[in-house]
Length: 100
Length: 360
Image 1 (tube, rainbow over the protein chains, first blue to last red):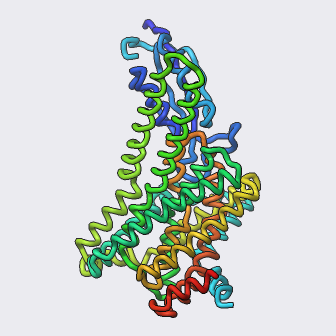
Image 2 (image 1 turned 180 degrees about the vertical axis):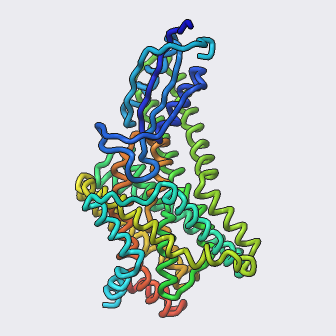
Image 3 (image 1 turned 135 degrees about the vertical axis):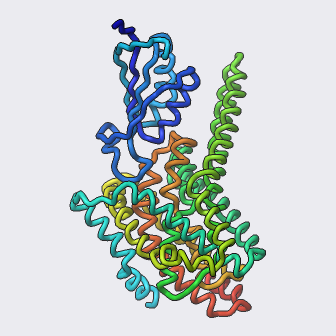
C-alpha cells in the first residue's frame, strides 16, 4: 500500500495552553488533533502534580508540509515566552492524504 | 487572650488538623494522594451544598435585603483590587502583569475558604445569612474582569505610544490589538459565567429556593451532615498541594509573603465592620469578611493563564494557596469572629462610635 508523506507536529504544554494551540490550529483550518494528559519534568519544574489546572497535555497534529511552518511560527511567536511548552516535528506516512 | 484561645481551639478542629496532616504527608514525600476524580468532585459538591443552603435560607428570609450587601461586596472587591495593584506595583515593584494578576487573585473570592468558614461557624453554633452564597457567585468574576480590562488597557496604551513614536502605516495593528482586547474580555466574561463553579452554585441556589426546607429533608444527609466531612477530605488534598509548594514560598520574596498576610487581614476586618454596619448578623459579618479576605486559587489560574499569560502563576498560586489560605482558615477566621462578636455585642447604635474609637 502506498503511504504519503505528511508531518506530525507534537506539542507538549501545560493544560491551560491547550486552548490557545487549538485556536491557532483552527485559524489555519486544521480541525483534527489528538490530546492526552501527561506528566513530566522540564525547565519549569515537575508538572502534573498539584492542582487540576497545572497538568500537562500532549497534542498531536498531523498536517501537510505547507501549513507546518506557519503553524509553528505562530505558536513560537505567541506562546514560547509565557507558557511551558515544547514542540517537535516528525515525518509520518498516511494512507489517505486527502484527510489532512 | 480570647483570640489566642479561639485560634488554639480552631487549630484542633478536624479541618485544620487534616490540612496540616496533608502538608506533613507532602513534606515527607509520601505518595498519599486523593484520587483525581474525587478532588475534582469535591469542589462541585461543596459549591452545591453552599448553594442549596443559600437558596433555602433565601426562601425563608427573602432576598430583598440582599441587594445592598451584594453591591457593597462588589464595590469593595473592585476597590481592593485597585488598592492591591497600587501596592504591588509601587511598593512591591512587580511588573504590570504580575501586579494585576496578584491584585485580582486577592480581590477574588475562594470557595474552599468560604466552605471552611461555614463549617467554622457551624462549630461555633452561629448561623449566617444565606444570600452570601449568591454574593459568592457574583463576586467570583468581578475582580478578574477588572484586572483583565485594566491590563489590556495598559497594553493597548503601550502599543499606541510605540505607534506614535514610529510613523508609518501600522495603525491597523492598534485596531487589531483593541479588537483582540474586546474579544478577550467577552470571552473571559462568558467563560466565568458559564464556568462550572458559578453554574453549579447558581443552579443549587435556585433549586434550594424551590425545594425549601421540606424538600431538603430527603437530601439532608448528603448535603448537610456530610458537609464538614467532605471538607476534611478536600483539606487533605489542599494540604498536600500546599505542602508541595512550601519550597516555592521562599522564591516569592519577603514582600509578597507580607502582602499575603497583611492584605487579607486588612480586607477581612474592613469586611466584618462594613457588614456589621449594614446590619448583617454575627456570623454573616464573619462570612462577609472572609469573602473579602480570601484569595482565589482554583479559579484564578484557569482565568488568568488565559487572560494575562505573561503573569507568573508560581507567584499567584503559591501566595494564595501556600500562605493566604492557611493563614485565613487558621488565624484570620478566629480573629474576625472575635471582632464580629465584639462589635455585635456593643449594639448597633454605638457601633459607629465603637468603630471610630477602635480606629483612632
